Image (cartoon, rainbow, N blue to C red):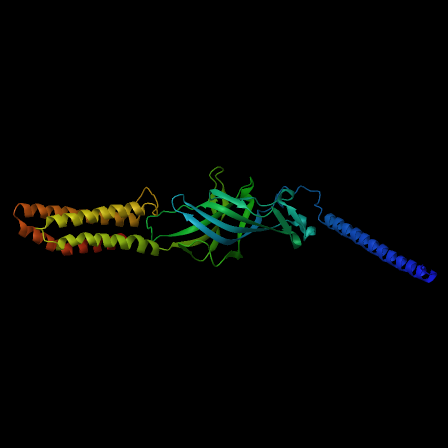
Length: 357
């Protein structure tokens, strides 16, 4: 049986715990009220003024100045045949809207305020990664950053393939009806690129950006176009060791017939035919890695000239075999001796002409 003192102690303990619970509940309630009040205050402070924000700032004034920066994050692939490149980049837009100067620190969807709507002149498919929300800074300076990933057109001629150099370009142009009332300006401090790219068979140079006027094809009016450019140089070592060097060896193999006695026309013709068939098989093997184009590149010119030399070696073997068969072995031997230096010199001339152009 508990004594009265023990009962009194138990009641005091329960009363103490009850006070603690009540205090915690009161604190949490007060915190929730304060949080709700703070959120309501923030929402009230970011409430847009009751004016037409769909129109650009100073609609009847000077063109709106839009500062543009770009961060090139990665270039993953260049498709020579489709004339496209796969890339990832971020566009940074800044403009001033004095109607929002009291809303510093607020964020708004693009549908809530006026914004400079820009579109890519490069045809292709790029997809935004961030929500379309703009941040308002002091004095109504609005910043909008969007990250894109996808493919854009990259028109480039491959006449110098595989020793070609090109300039990859991303072009932005205003797409609104009031496009002529935009003044695009390059933000030199925010024209950036990462040091390393995913692409392996190209090297990228120093980036640059500029704004230049262009005539709109529909309206005929001049509009500002923002150009972001990065030079690209193809790494030719793969084609040097996998295409040019084996092809040179095949051509040199066809010259061995000039050191075979014309009297032994069987081995001579066999070697020429083998060289020709080897070259044809090599071309079939290379068809999958070379761009399929409607015009000749440097590499195409070299392959065609090499094929012609191998075929001429075959024709020369047939000629000397015929001369031996009609009793003119001496002339056939003289032809072989002449071709021993004519064909190598012709090959050197082809290389100098094709790659020295």
